[in-house]
Amino acid sequence: MARVTALLGALTSDDGPLGPGSRSTLRHRAGVPFVGTPVRAHRAVHPAQRVRSPAVGILDRFRLDDRVAVVTGASSGLGAVFARTLAEAGADLVLGARREHRLGETRAEVEKLGRRCVTVRTDVSSPEDCQALVDAAMTEFDRVDVLVNNAGIGTAVPATRETPEQFRSVIDVNLNGCYWMAQAAAKVMAPGSSIVNISSVLGMTTAGLPQAAYTSSKAGLIGLTRDLAQQWSGRKGIRVNALAPGFFTSEMTDTYPEGYLESQKQRILAGRIGDPDELAAALVFLASDAGSYVTGVTLPVEGGLLTS
Image 1 (tube, one colour):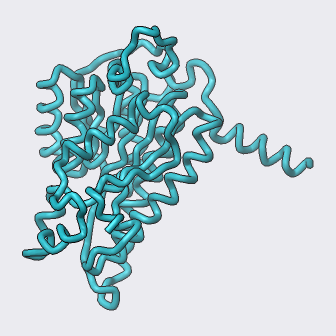
Image 2: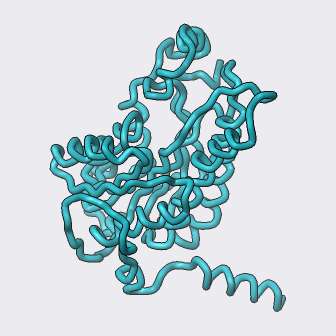
């Protein structure tokens, strides 16, 4: 019993809920550049904890007004779509990616929607970069309500030829990077917050290409989602879920061999490649109060590919 008590005490002290005022002491570390519209938001009751009027409609639960969302891999592709969609839902954005010049393009689109936005050059394989991205959010907005772990890379290398460096580089970004981001964000997130990991249907099935590193990282992310949900949903009030996209038009699909996507359509019950906005709509569900009773799940958005 003494050992159990000591273990529980260690867990509570290491990553239990933060006390009053402790989040406001976290500030962006010196020397890390970021750009955006400065703002100081008052630390108030989390929107998800406010008492709702009976007159509030179901569609209002999908709104993200007064929330701050951090999106990684936001310089292009699905990450840029996610950023725009969250802004349309009312969130202010903190965006990270390695290609800083492309981040500026996404920021401009967010600001056109009337939302504030901060960008930070971020390599999620670096725990220090992940912490700096969260620090920037706290410095400018004093809160993180939503984390979208979208940064990822894909490779297609036969298993007998793949080098240790190639395999590790994919795991470092797609799996380890999500863990470092979740660790940093969970330390400052209030109850009612949401983490959404972007996994893939290739974490659940194969699709004809030699993608051992990519599929391993995405399957690992599904397991990580379950475990973080069981650690944080009850104790911290942070929901952790994953999306498992099927085939959507993106920079990654541009690298596929000619004719590959057409061949995969035979497996998709919907008979077509997905529209990125269809995936972004599912993201808003998991990020917002509309999904307030959903945690620890991986939601496939794949037109029925896994059913065939």
